[in-house]
Image 1: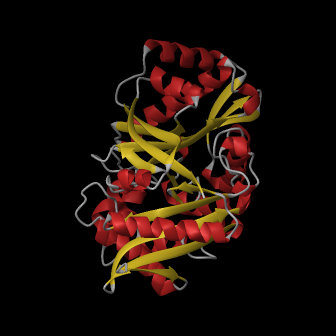
Image 2: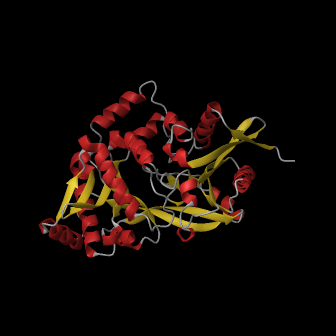
Image 3: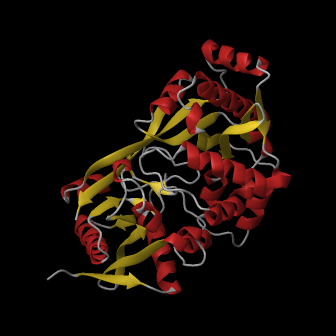
Length: 383
């Protein structure tokens, strides 16, 4: 009889223990970045995470002899169930995520428990790890364990790949991030494309206006939901989610790093660049006390970051196959690069995540001579 006990988490004490386990598990991993514990608990607390207004989630903890040895979530996104099956999700699709375990036996028991919960809800396919929305931390880190993740990217134990595949899971989709040296100018071809765009009176690349933050966020949401709607794994972001993310990100939103591209006055593309908050967060070890809050506040007032991350960009669908789409992208990337170096002391940029088969974005990443630095795999299995 197994000595592993799996227990459901249904209260705040359990959610805190769920978060704390990761701190124990990765205590000796120099490339894991501890999240702020309060924010991590909020992400899994109903009423604190807008994603949970259209999702159902059950958390589980594994214990052995009274000691925590693992964790997992099982969840269903009601909006994912409504998506076309050919785009990866659709009816019968459930998920598991926030997966960590001391050993393979515990990992196997946790995944089996998550699968049983999904079956009990009528799900016929499991995808994982997805922690927890597709917009948060999708996939298992396959390549890139040798350096820390940037803000809002995941980092997992390298042993998990073999454990998951041994349970019959196969890769459904890979997503990648690209690394580039932002201190160097882009190749001559890109420079010519940018210069031509600057001479085009139809094109206006503008910074966001932080004083009209809600209005600007609505413009970006409209472009995003149109631009990404045909992508694998797409689930529309809702207004409450955008509002909530906006509040969380507002302290690291800087006007010279976020751009909206207009063509003949119409907003048709955007790009968001963020200073890597993980750099000042890592030494805090998940706590703002006693002096962490002061250190973080000082950084936020005048941030200096070695790394900048581009988590999101998009061009409206009707332009995506046009030369104009890549021109707008190159212009926004170049303007962000200039500002990142001049105003924030950045030397490195990271673009992504990007779907492995997003040919347009892969071509842009190759043209600016960036290289894949992390690869994450989303697995699937029929239940």
